[in-house]
Image (tube, rainbow, N blue to C red):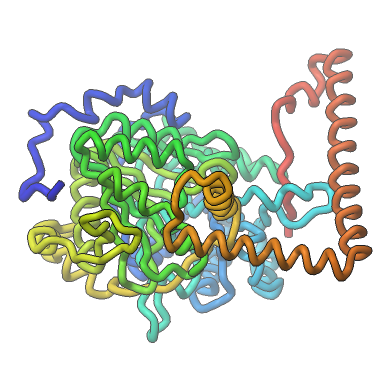
Length: 522
């Protein structure tokens, strides 16, 4: 499954263009096709942040700034100053951050926002009324300015993504969207903002039809919400439809089994399926858990590469040289099923060609994971072919500068943000189940997972044995807390249902089917 020397002529090769009609994509992603856009690919932290600041400085009506992480460091303060400056000029500025992602950012950081009139909200802070909120996070990374320009990708706000003089910036990917789709992004922000407090003002609302077309690129703004599984279904759809290649970059690849099966089925059918992951994950245990699924993918013909810089944080997919996806969604259960995410799907040969060129350039800093001839459990490493190493030099993202030249500053980066969570427990449970049931012989990474789980179970057993009263009270307190919360919610839902029967036009009727998200306003 080697890379072709020249990408095929899309006009003569049947593929995704014909097999993905608009209604199919809409059903899978929950997003409608939006015409009339222009997109710019971003893959360098300093350049990306410069573009964000320039767009914010040009804002005339509103700025919607939503990010999983805002750090109180040099980069975070630069953005704070820019947003505060616009608020003082009369621009409506709203900042939405995730409480868990930004837990280390102190109150002092937010004070200038409040003094300047910036509206700041934390998503799902700890709450006695909502103990389950910790399981659902706002993992989006998005900036919307006046409904005319928007930025989506994996970039959070911190020195890790910009570099600090000693450490190069993280390797990440995003896009700048200009045109009606930017107003769709603003609408996505409005919906989540309205769920945790008062809605945005009429002045800050833009209808996509009011935005003049600036290009010819069709896009789909995919709004990830808990249990909607939109990127999940989109990935399965692409895996089932691709004819030639599917190239994925993901920092925390712990794919649910149905998604992994979709990718392995494509590989068995001759599709060139490649997955690029970090060799040095900022959360080493997560890296080990991810590697626990390597063998099944490799045996099916999926090619796996590990990027040798300190960290790669991009979340992208490109298929058949025409379909691209860039955004915040990781390929694990927590992201695909539990979080609020935002991604953009693009049906465009030019952008897909740039994505493929960038992917091949990344492979020059990666090693391929391969199975020995006899499929022994030990995994050996090999480098990409010489042809693949030369291919990136042929692609350019802007006039006069090759990918190879621009990627010199991207050869290394540092960590990301993904504590041990749902996908890791799923992987651990899988390894534990396989070991108990005797389904297969566990590889080295699986044995690491199993040993970690065994150690934790033994530790819990020791604590319970030596301190049974304390453990009993802890269990009783947590169970009582959860029971009270669930009971109150059941009562409130029952009362709302009765009011609906008595008065179908009541506000409760309008809110039926919605759900509460914890939040706070400062």
